[in-house]
Length: 638
Ligand code: AHR
Image 1 (cartoon, rainbow, N blue to C red):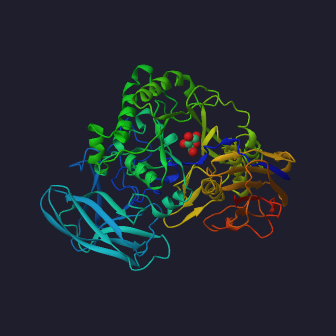
Image 2: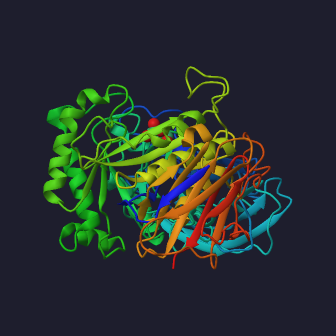
């Protein structure tokens, strides 16, 4: 393949690699990115779906068990800690000389390392009379043979709820995550302790509430935009379970949480400000998803009842953006004085599926018009199909097979440039295509983890998006997280899998990261001697704003090595130089290979100096591209 690159850029690129963090899916926030280790910390997890519009008070003892044969754990709505967290547990014992307490099994156990763990819980006496209970709180092996760390607390309990705090630091790492957390006594429970909001945090990422390894993995992709909080979870299973931001700010004691769309319970501890803080610390900006009056039970808010939802969206934006006034004061009271930098708002989610389009024409315009009037500086992204033109921006989603993504390399080439920007804020190869499933979602070839060919197909698609970076402003793989503990996940494949202790970056992760690490500002047109789809060799070439380097990205989707010659032609008088030239490469021999918990490094990229001889004296780049590979070469221009 011979690629002749026009040395003069043809267009500016706005394309950046983005992230899409959806709360609740695959226990990706509660049980994942939210560093809270206690599962069901406020006895909110209901048995099955909650009934009625309000899940408050329907919680169970899921993930909790008793310490001591004579101990009783009784859930009670008496003397609630707060309106939001009405249920608590009464821990009593009929034996004065037996251990008494309760144990939490976490989200698939606990990772124990020699680091500080911060404990907090609320307690009162069960009968309201003063009682003193001496407890030990700590992390233990599940079989109780090891105490990893433990703190003694003397609880002087009265009728009033009191918050108790302690920190503990194990001296060694546990060999696995088969560990539990307990609060227990040596003998009896006094006249009984009533407990709620039991919380344990390990050190977090940069002072946020985010789990350190997962947040760092996200930051390492150098995202431009981060779309939050969903996805389907923004919409909720029913209108009453929509993401209402007012329940996701302030003291966690006052956050009622809600049933998630995907799996488990949303504590909303990883709430609005927590998300914004993490995104800001990543050097990115949010694409804030606004509920648009449609939920997953396929019901839409009637036209004449949209008012409160529009008002809530406006209040949410005032809360994040105002520099003074009541919303700014409220934000400051929650610890954040400065407004956030927020320029992108997405209205709704996937308003092209099921019967959402029926109500979209009456739902979308009032949200758009009200937000545009109050915040004319914001870019408003419609979650509508591409055919819905005339908007500032739209968000398309694509889940498909490798061959579909490879074929989509040029899909944007002919799309009209009429002022509507495109985002692809959900994309992923989800099915290998090997069994030609009629339904790629439920078919036999649904992927468990991204494969090499899936990642290369996504890379090919992203090359197409980048070459059309005047139109396509960003793309995000979806979903990001998957808690691999059985029962905590239901959507595969995902960008990063994890359990209580480990995390694994998929091959698709490395592809997405490569685009973040090698962002371009200008697009250069390329003439290929053989059409890319015929060659199975795809390209995108760009340069930085200063014109100081040129970046060549090449994907070989074939099972055999291919040679490529890349030459700059015309304009500028600048020459490529070998000094400082870099290469990043991902390749493997097995198209169906994946990175997994058992084999996390099956396919990982290698980077370093461009191999000697690749850059010829005449300035052309001569490459042999390995089978199934993605190669990025950065050449200084002087
Ligand atoms: O990413 C998983 C789901 O796929 C999202 O919640 C939804 O927007 C899409 O259908």
